[in-house]
Image 1 (cartoon, helix red, strand yellow):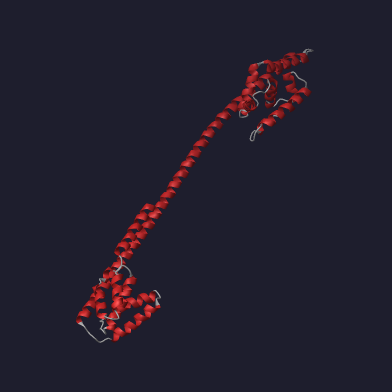
Image 2 (tube, rainbow, N blue to C red):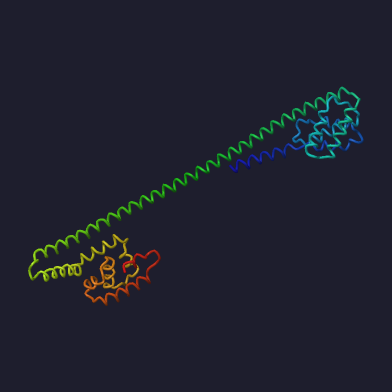
Length: 329
C-alpha cells in the first residue's frame, strides 16, 4: 500500500515537472508591452492556452492579453478573458492585480477599434479557455477518483490488518484453549490418582476398623479383652513401622494428593537423613505427635525437638510458592 502511494506521487510529480508552464513567453510579452503592444499581443496569441497547467498562469495570460488589447484600443466582443483575471485575483486576494484587471475591463469596454482578425483570434482564445476548463475539470475528477481509490485502498488495508489481528487473536485463543484442555486433562488425571489414593486410605481404615471390631467381638466379656485389643493395636502399629511396602504406599499417596510434596523435599534437601525424612512423611500424612513417637520409637519430647529442627531446615530451603511444604507442621 505504501509503495503504491509512492509510485502514484512520483508519477504525479514527474508529470507536473515535465509539463512546465509558458512563463518565458509571458515574460517576453511583459517586457515588450510598453514599447510594442502589438508584438506582445502576437506573443500572447501564439500561446495555446488550452495547454496551460494552472489557473495562475491562465490569469496572468488573461491580464497581459487584455492589457495589450487596451493599449492598442482594440475592441473585444466579450469580457470573458478579462473576467478570468478579475475572478482569479479577487478569489486569491491579490489586490494590485485585481485593481489593474478592473481598470483594463473598463478600458476594453470603451475601446472602439475593431479588427476582424483580432476578433477571430479573441474568440479562438475563448474556445481554448473552454478547453482548458474542461481539461481542468477532467483532471480534477481524475485526481478525485485517485484520492477515492487511495482512501478505498487504505480502508481495505486497514480492514485486512484488522482481520489479520482478529485471526491472530483467534489463534491465540485456540492455543490458550488447547493449553487449558491439556491442563484440564492433567487435573483430571491428578484427581483420578487422588481419588484412587483416597479409596485405598478408606479401604485400609475400614479394614482396620473391621479387624479391631472382630477382635473386640471375639474377646468381649472375658478378662483377656483389654490385652487382646492392645496386642491387636500394637500389631497394626508395628506393621506400619516395619513394613517398607506400607511406608512406600504412604509416600506415593502423599505425593499424589499433595503435588509431589515429598519429591520436592528430597530435591531441596538431597542430604536429608532417613529419620528426618520418615518424620516428614508421617507429618504429611497428618499423624499426631504421639502417633509419630510410637512409629519412630522416640519420646514425645524428642519428636518435638526433631520437628523443630526439620521445620527450620525446610524453611531455610523453601522458595516462593512452596508454602505447602511448611503446612505439614
